[in-house]
Image 1 (cartoon, rainbow, N blue to C red):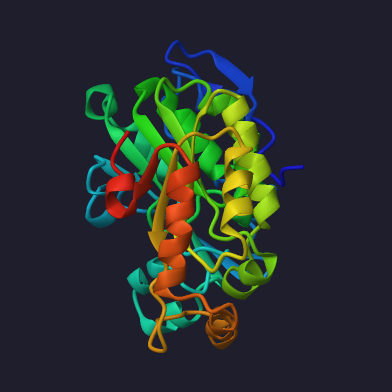
Image 2 (cartoon, helix red, strand yellow):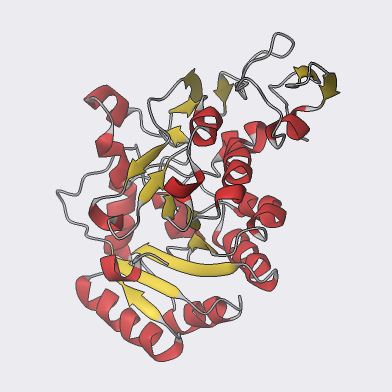
Length: 317
């Protein structure tokens, strides 16, 4: 059950002077609002400040949509509801966008919520977003554990429905299935589920705080069966135990679009969490080399339809 950080009800005064007593969800979709109410304003329920190993902080942002660049430059905007990510994957490039080394070293142990995000979206003109492409998210996971409690990404998506942008949602969390009802309201939407290996041993070494591989495959299968655009991203592809059975498990989801890129590992690889040594040791134990990746890639190319590679695979929908 969601732990709400909103009041049970608000009093809402309309332009005609009439007072309505509405639940928060109703207010968020009401066109009668005269003032933007923060999703996180509540005198009744304290904000969540700790979840698992992660410290949760709240702060207003200057913008919730950022012009896309770099790996996802083919999109118009990126949307990151959070800074930081409690999944804390050991190889995550996003950690190196942190403001200082202390935050990099503590990657996975802090999350900052952009608490005025809905207000910022609602200030946008329809013409500025209609038909634009949005990548959600580029430096965090919009469905990391705190999302189960706050439903912040869900509310942002709900706020975007009237604008009808083209949206790609990147996650490795099965929680995304909770929001199928909202996803079905977009004309163009795609869920990218990150599945990096077929081995739980590998997953626990590289992604110890993330959901298991089977959970992710089941989730994206549910997304696909709901006729919501779906894609499996093997980005990066970590050591694989059996390429043939891995390919079969991907096909069994019913997904028809895939993206892959290699994991560039060496003795000088930048890792931000404490499992670096074990991850590299496991890579050596499994004899996972650039040649191994190429062999696996050939199997996947043979068995999977529509397999994109690297940056080109992430081109805007």
